[in-house]
Image (cartoon, rainbow, N blue to C red; front, top):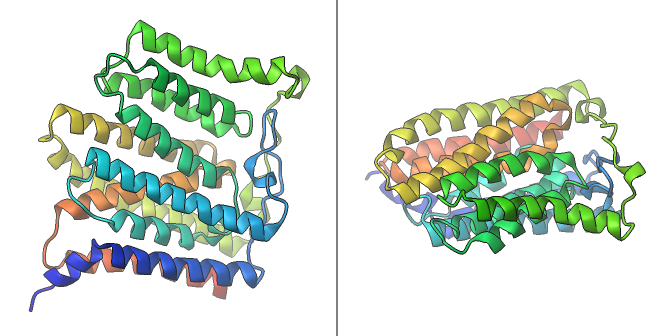
Length: 326
């Protein structure tokens, strides 16, 4: 008997649902036993940051779960509509939920990272729909409008404006009309915020960030760094292997994969440069890494690949247990 049936099971909705259920149970245990470290600092440039939107912890937990579901829905649509993984699989959902629970503080409260991991994939859905489109200016405007508006709550959104500009070139729609649409999208929310007095010019200032490492004890900080390092190492290794296959894809598929790669590398660079704000990027980093890992395993379905899949997921749950025990 070969391991092919187990490999096939790993790509099913049943397996993804089982991992998601296990992660949800773990998150609830972590939250209701009082382990969650709440984020209380205001990271907004003019509006309150997302971690301050829900003052009741249980509502914040529910919002975090809803955001996680939103991210998985966006991942599913990206693969179903644009076939970015080159096969039907739900492995990305299993990886994403396992990665999230490895750092349970980000899975048990709603904050900027929770929203960022929904907004950027949603923007990618819009961006991909613009590929070689002659009438993409409205969608381009929406992408830049949303990212610019949310920058008022956390500066990290501004980084993905850079990725969106690059995305216009990758989608073969970088022209004067779309460039003007993107600039209008950036300016418009600030005109509205300032014009209606929602934000005053004197309130626009870089916030004094409270580092997550200051709130964590040494053991938790080490676990956070270890989790991010493990995810980054596995993802970059699989990305290098994926490149060989990606080269053979058609121009449309290469453009889509190039956008994912740009978001992944930009997020990793931001986490290194803006390490005090690292968890704001972490859920989106998990999204990007989950998609990259799923891409590899969806195109490499050997008899024994289930061992690597189960092993990676087991590491994340082991990291969660360390958060509880230590």
